[in-house]
Image (cartoon, rainbow over all chains, first blue to last red; front, side):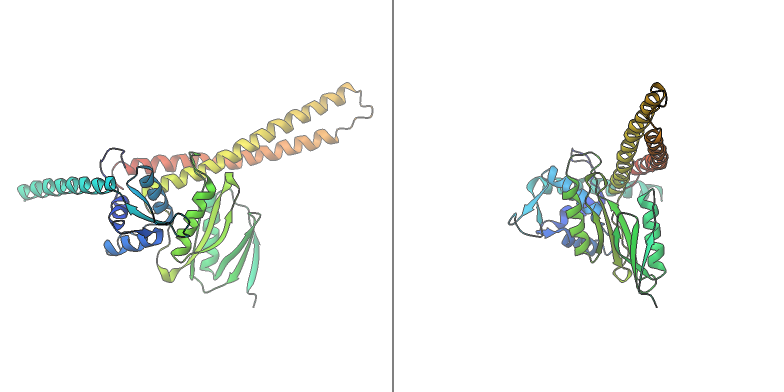
Length: 105
Length: 204
């Protein structure tokens, strides 16, 4: 994952779109699995690393009271910008890929 | 029929420990307690009922406390149905031992290349810490032993014995063996990190 709004990893993309509603760690794992139809299963280490990176970039923030046992997270405006930028990138990839394949078939 | 058994094992790497724990789980023994990193207590379970995972919670970059990392990973693991068998709380060797029922599906702690790289770096950091520790003790014991030998030679063998020097040299030899044992995995982990980084350039 680049500091600039470059390509996001699949895990990061799914975590960000999961956090449009506040969720705690395991909630994110469950939501990502559901969104991807069971294809993407995040491990605890993967989720922990991604959450810390995203907090560091202010793409997500803690949600609710700080004293609560289970920390919940929510996406920030800059996180939403990153998702929008990623969708534009993915659309470009898709369009270019389709165009080249259709021209060759 | 015995429902509990204790095994004594010493492994140079977490990888080997994890293989041993999973071999036991497959034969119908789940780990319930680990003490001194060498004594593993198992309880009978159904064969293949559990999957065991061991992860290092050391931050290889020393940017954050291992304790915070360990607590948060442990929280996610328990929420996802895993049982924590043991958490070691020594900052230079923080580890989490967890098991989870196979009925809950696959059990992996690190599922993407970045976290696999971070885990390998943490495991390598543990070995580097241990290598530095054993090298320092080796040097200290070796020079103390040499010093005692020269004291013995200078004193014309009157009233001074070589027992202390032998103890120091034995300690130095032990540390040298430990150094060799812990240094070998460092290159293994470095190779693995390189491979993962190469893989990372073309896929996630």
